[in-house]
Length: 424
Image 1 (cartoon, rainbow, N blue to C red):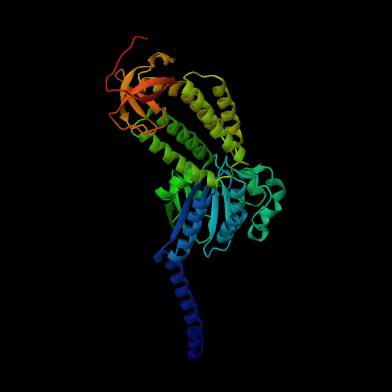
Image 2 (tube, rainbow, N blue to C red; image 1 turned 180 degrees about the vertical axis):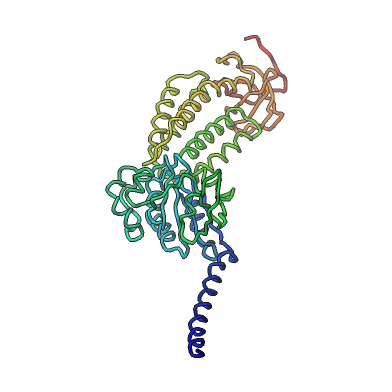
C-alpha cells in the first residue's frame, strides 16, 4: 500500500507542477505590458522628406521597444531615385520589428513606387474602395518583395487591384480591414481581446497604437514638393515680383514673391521637371509683362496665354496635375496679368488714361531716388520714372517730364524747382 501511495505521489507531483506552470503562463500576459504599435501617416508623393521620416520612425521603433510599425499609406507615387526607393524598401523589409502597410482610408491609393514599398512590408492591407498597383517596371529588388506580390506583378505593372482582389491574390490577409483598428489586430505581436459591443462579440487591440505624422517643418517641405504646390508657388512668386516692379511699393509683395519662388525652387528640385515646360512658364509671365507696360492686352498677351497653357501641361515629366490645379494656375494668372495688373497700376499711380505724351514738359520732384529708375511726383500723383540720361537723381530733386512709355515717365533734371501744370 505504501508503495502505491509513493508511486501516486510521484505521478501527481509533476502533474501539479505542470498545471501550476500552465496557470502561471496563462496569467502572465495579463501582467505584462501589452506593448505599443507605431502608426505612421504617410500621404502624398514619397519624397526624400517622407522617406526619411519613415526610416527614422522604424529605427526609433526598433530601439524603443515597439512591437510593430504600421504605415497608413495614401500615395500616388514616388519621386525618389531608384537607389533611394530601393533603400527605403530594404529598411522596411529588414526591420527588426514587423512592418505593415495599410492603404486607407477608403479611396486611398498606393501607386507606382508607393505600391512597390507596400510590397516590401510583412503585411499589406487595403480598405474597401482603395487601390494598389501601376507599379511600372520594378525598381525594388524582387527578393525584398513578398512572393505573392511578385507573382501578381503581371497584373500590377500597368493596372490596379482593390481589396477583394488583393485578398484573392494572397497579397493581403483574408480578412476585412475597413478601418486601421481592424488591420492592426492582425499584425504579428499585437495583443487583442474579445469584447461585446451592441450584442456582438468583436476583437479589439490591447496593444496601444501610437500615431505620428511629419513634424510641421518637414510637412512644409513635403507640401511644397508636391507638383501642385510647386507649380502654383512658381506662378504666384513670378506674378508678385512683376507686381512689385510696376507699383514701386514698400517691398512686401516682392518679399512674399521671393519667398514663394524659394519654396517653389525646392519643390521643383525634388519632382521631375521638363526644362521646356519651366521655360514656357517664365516666358508667359515675361510676355504678359510687356503688355502690362503698354497698358492694354495685345499680341504679347496672346503669346503669354499660349505659353502659360503649354508650360502648365508640359512642366512635369511623368506626373499629372488635377484639372483644378491647372484651372487655378492658368485662369488665375491670366486674369491677374491681363486685367488685375493694369487696374492696380492705374490705381496706384492715379493713371486713368493710357496715353501720357501730353505730360511732356510737366515738372515735379523725385520721391524715390532715380538710379535710374525710381518714383516721382507730378501733378500730385506718384509715377514710376526713369532718368533719360541714366544719371542718379536724389530724393527732392526737381525733374521735367520728357516722354512716357506706358505708365513709365521718362524724366530729366529740372531747370528749377518749379512745378508747372500745362493744359493737355
